[in-house]
Length: 376
Image (cartoon, rainbow, N blue to C red; front, side):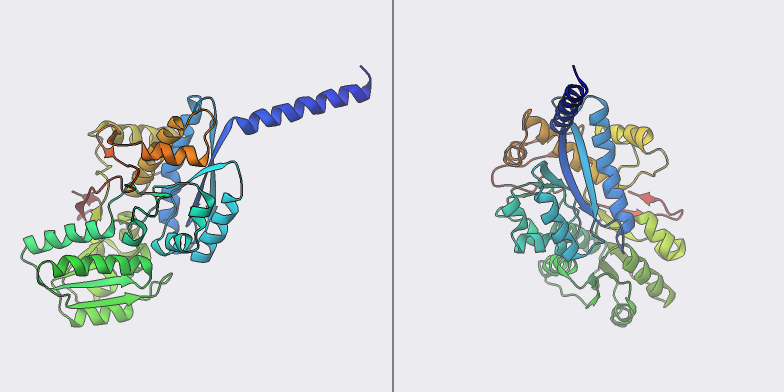
């Protein structure tokens, strides 16, 4: 064979190898807040998926195909979420979306019909906003309870303790307003009213006005619907100004970050509702697996609710990819997710259906203890 023939043969072999490599991958895309006020949470979200996908790939993949986990940073900015989601959905190799964050961010994807037009399932979004949880939003598969479920649980907990004077500090956007509505509804069911409600601007930790308004109302408890930095800022400023009410927040915050930012003295006693089982005690098989994969793939990272939640979401997505068959498409993945009814994951259950996109309503309350650790 002459030189030209050799080159042609080499080129053909290279093209075939590239085609085989492309065919041997299943691409899932994650748009997450890796910068900005939610950066620490975003990194934990990505980590939870990474350890699952790495484990699957190291054991042969799914039907012989490796998972490519494509991660993009939206900085928790709504417009960036929309832009990047359109970008990844324009790629035909992306068969599913995973682990996005933000009620307002995902709400904009719905309003602009980005998900419907793209036809790809979004699995395990890090939000409990009720407007995102209707059966008509058929491309979103939630594995967590909603903010209304969390609010009901917290208000029930407080009223059991005899507390009736409740205030709310909330992020003034779709996320915070969804949580506020949940608390207001839970309070109203008990023939009560909030003593105060005060918002703060999204993507800031400017909570000074909220601290003043809420402290002036003399509440017995304050439920916060806020992310890490403003939560910590409120706890610190409220406590340092002499505020003595019980403080609680919904599940989206990282307790370690709160302690770091607010100081242990101000964070001690803060209650946090949770939507997945307590991940620090390996007492059920799925938590033991999470611990094993963390030790193997992320030995320098700490156990957290956030990474555990997205670990669970990644496990659900992997099962759907398996059920979608050797050549998964977006439509096949959606159908496979709908078929996950009473799916058992080692002591934790998720259940979807053709008209059900809420896989779990699990809620419990934890508290930051005297050493900064989260206690049940």
